[in-house]
Length: 372
Image 1 (cartoon, rainbow, N blue to C red):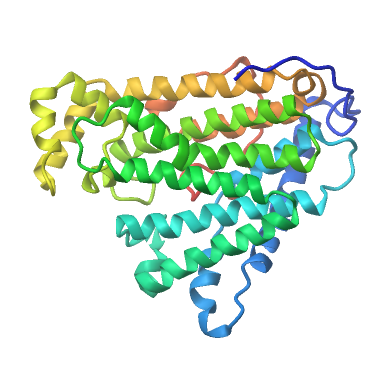
Image 2 (image 1 turned 120 degrees about the horizontal axis):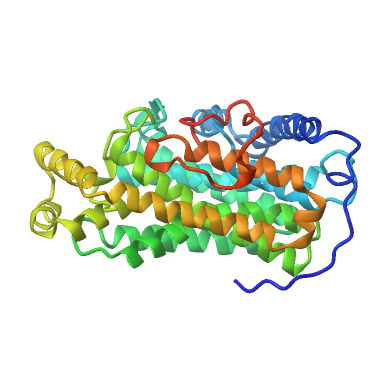
C-alpha cells in the first residue's frame, strides 16, 4: 500500500500530555475499559430480540463477549485521530458494536459449517438450539449489523466487508481435503475470512473520526496485516495447543490444510500427501501429520510469516506522521495488545519492537486464550 506523508496538527487528547508515559498508558487503559463496557451495553440493545420466543439463541450470542478485539481496534483507532480529550462519542461506540455483531454472526455460521459442538469451552449455538435456529440467528445478526451500520454511515463499508468475508470462506471451503493447496491459496482465503474484518475494525474508528484518506489507508494496512498474523497464529495454535478451548488439530479433522501443514507437506511430500488425501483422516493419521508438522520446522516458518505481518502492521502505523507525533501512548498500547496475543505459544514469541518493554497489561477479558 502506497502511503504519502501528510502534515497533521497535534491532538491534545493523546499528545502533549501533562502525565508521564506510564500515567498516560494507565489513562488509556482505564478509558478503553470504560468504552468496552459501553460497547457491551450497545451490543445487547443492538441485537435485542423482537419476540420473547426467540430470545434464547439471540441473547446467547452476546452473553459472553470475550476479548472484544475488533471493538478494541475501533476504539484505539479513534483515539489516534480524535481532536480533543472529550468522552468517546457514541457513534464510535456504535461502530465498535456493529463490527462485533458481524463477527459474532460469522462465528454462528462458521460453527454450522464445521459442525462444531463447542467454542471456547461452552456449547455452540447449533449444539444448544439446533442448526435451523443457529442459522437464522446468524442471519438475524447480519441484518441488525447492516441496519446499525447505516445509522453510522458505514453500510457500504460493512457490505464490502461481508462480501470479502464470504469470498474468503468460500475459497477455503472450495479446497477442503486438497493436499495441493498452496501458500497463495491459503493467504487469499484468510485475507478475506479473517483479516478483512480486522482491517475494517481499524478503519471504522478512522471513519467515525473523519480521518483523511492517508490516515484511513494507514489504519487499514495495520488492520490487514494484524488480521493475517492473528489467523496464522490461530492456525499454529490449532496444531500445537491444548489450552485454547478447541479440539487440537480441528482444522485437519475438517479438511482445512493451513500454513503449517502446507509447509510440512512441502518438506515431507511422500509421507504427507497420501494422508492428506484421506477422507476422513484416522486419528493415527492425524497424529502422524501433527508429528511431521512439528519435526519439519513448519511451525517456526509459519510463525516467521506471522511476525513479518506484525512488522508490516506496525510499519503501517509508523508511516503516518500524526500517529508517531500525536499518539505514541496509543501506539505503545497497540504494541502491547499484539505482543500478548503473540505470546500464547513459544513458536510465536520474540521481540516485536523496541517498544515491547514497559507495556501495560491488556484490559480485563482480553488475556490470551479467551474468545477474540
